[in-house]
Image (cartoon, rainbow, N blue to C red):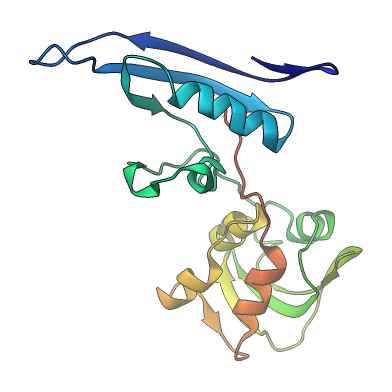
Length: 199
């Protein structure tokens, strides 16, 4: 636990499995269940406590964010062996309400043509106008700047849609040069989406 005179600043839950190698050298494994902190100083202190445990040569954890600040704290980032897995999927059911309700990292004005075989009310052209103060998304008949499947919009909605990569893979159709980059920038977010829960 990390605490100061203001109270608890964070905690780590873990267990250690002791073991020894063939030369009787300690080779324990620390299995980290949770690590949460209220601020960067407490976060760094907790990780130092976890990584500096005596008789432990390996630390294992799961369910950490893909942009976990731990990577930046490590003296040798190459020692990390990370595997990525899906944690949460979002399916946009009402494009106008969803895109109007979220925040944006940069201004954008774009006409998006959404392809949606399940929710036909989504399958049309929408003008998204957004900046740092708010957004509107309204149906229009204008020519689209980009055409994308609703699945791509769902992943972008959380701020980690990798729209540029999907464009390169041929999953999106860009009708106005550079618009996918501008849309991806506006819909990006830091920290990247993460729930930390299994359900």
